[in-house]
Figure (cartoon, one colour):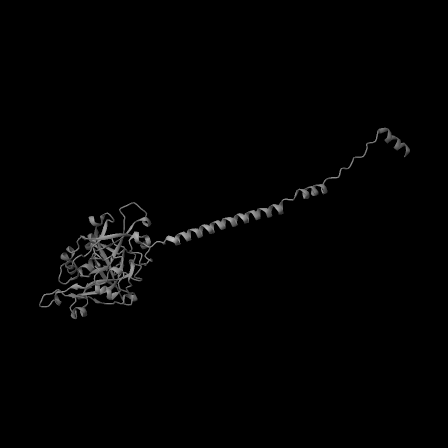
Length: 360
């Protein structure tokens, strides 16, 4: 399986990295000469290739095809029989109508086991529409361990490089000495209602061998040698069966774990392909700076704590003064508000009541 790639070279640099030995250029001394592919910029509905550390399906990427697919190029090959052209990742079904992005099929990868049974892929293969996808490496997530998709470890896989070349560090290599990873694919041409064309491709995959089975159960068909490249690309001179035989498991791959930044295809930072241990992290102060920074933080914390204590004490005092009366004020208030004791009238005897009545 292949769901994300990395290619940070511009078109001229891609061509430089794709030079290949060509017998047509050999002189009488039989010295090996190298040819440079030609760049063919297709319209592709106005979309163009953009170098990126995090290429995802539906992006436009450089792809190698045989010059024989284009009559004008085949007649004037100038010593090269390979063309590099931009195509969209994810084959568009030729029968699809409407928005090319809404065909509803997952066509990023094509399973080799079902290639000849597929309505989508059998036609392009029989027509010789075989191509090679270029990248510095592809990202893969480990699915052989139980984990949520967001928690799966991600890796960048690439072909072995020269001793001093670090694929994640462009300061250690140039387009002339880097070894790009080359994956076999099929392409097709889709037309919209106006007749405008869009070239698109699907990467061929098969069951993982020991070199990658610890990480994922599928792996892309990687073309490691020039012979494999020629057998896959030269559809006019190489039979279908021989072309399929060129799709063999890779014998050499290297990889390193990368961070979760690559999980989101919108992240295009150069941190995407960095080894997990080397990914940038906030630097901590060192030496005297660390001591000064630490003391400054402590002083600030102490000052803040002392200020808070003073504020709390003053607030508490004001609250007591405003809410609780003093003892004298309390006594005064109690004196003013004390109830007046009124003596009840003396009760008269029965005899006195009778005398008062007689006198009246």
